[in-house]
Image 1 (cartoon, rainbow, N blue to C red):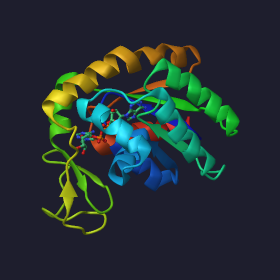
Image 2: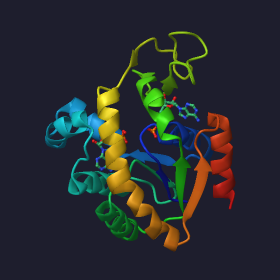
Image 3: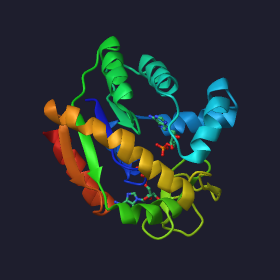
Image 4: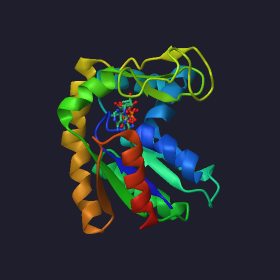
Length: 215
Ligand code: ADP
Ligand code: AMP
């Protein structure tokens, strides 16, 4: 099973990917996470991407598609992939089709998380994650059970993304509207799109995604 999770920044793609990994043993392929790792390691890709990401603009199609290529090459053929935050442009969509064919995979579902744009700034500015294991939290909607302690690994170190500020969020929304939303009709024509209410609670969204996967 190979699926794309699509939706604007803050829609819940990372949160739902983590649940899918846990429930179904799938592999999350998040180009945002790959790019942040490259920035941290100061690789040539990271050095090229950092300023673009800080502005909330899109990194080049070639860079992100080659990251996906490398990750698919390393993935066991029996393990399903969740594409999180990729593809984000029509060109990336075409590149993904080529990469799936190259690695002997087919696309099963494109799951669109529908959200109210007004809620997204609040979701993104309240987002933080565990500095050790990366578990995602939100100041009010999804805080750790014990204040200051990660539910998953017990770490007390947390971090916030430098691009999770109100100004950058607006640019990221504009990029989504202009470049990413327009790729949906092509997937619709292929009968692959399922729309899910991303404003529901985290567990409810997870249940709706599982219902789509169960077909
Ligand atoms: P994305 O990967 O699409 O950018 P995230 O999964 O990181 O989005 O979610 C953004 C923020 O919203 C996080 O702080 C997360 O804890 C919170 N969040 C995710 N899903 C929900 C939900 N269904 N209801 C409320 N808050 C949510
Ligand atoms: P995300 O973690 O998905 O919110 O992505 C964070 C940032 O990484 C984005 O604002 C872009 O600058 C960059 N990025 C992540 N994925 C892609 C992609 N598929 N195409 C272009 N840029 C991306």
